[in-house]
Image (cartoon, rainbow over all chains, first blue to last red; front, top):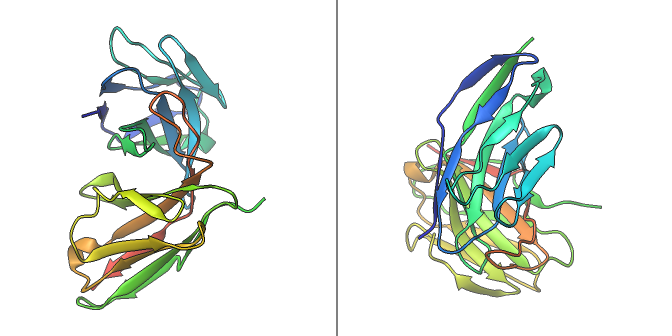
Length: 112
Length: 118
């Protein structure tokens, strides 16, 4: 079945630093790929998505490119802010029911 | 508009008691999902509803767990004879429909119910 592996955290960065959170997947076919974010005290929300190979999802300065060759969907941001401190989850659907499987989550802490 | 709501936000119960967790999805969303977020297991799928039917219950961890959905809207997750390992945050999500592997309908998550079993 489909699976996703995400780099472990926590990740601690200074403001304006470059961020990469690695995500690799195994899947049958070419499912959509997602990054979800969970800010402190808030619910899970979709950050960005890509629906086919070579697609680049972007939102709030974050980007991730669907790489079929390396089965990866790494999350990047050029200059992080304190407000980006959150837990980030890589995810993909596992069946036509749309149910999602998630990576283990990476906690990002950005210090001023 | 209103998002997905869940109640209660926090529930503390004693081992062996039954609990009911409620989810109100976004109006018009036919697909509804329950997930569980715990320290040891991360985020894991529990059950999926399309309308009032549950074609995928594969994530329910034991027969102590059950769920129903009525009127294609509100869903209730019931845990009988709770155990300490049931302690987790239970998340509900809804989407317009289930979509498919490559055509995704965004799932909107509720704030969760934090269950603590003493």
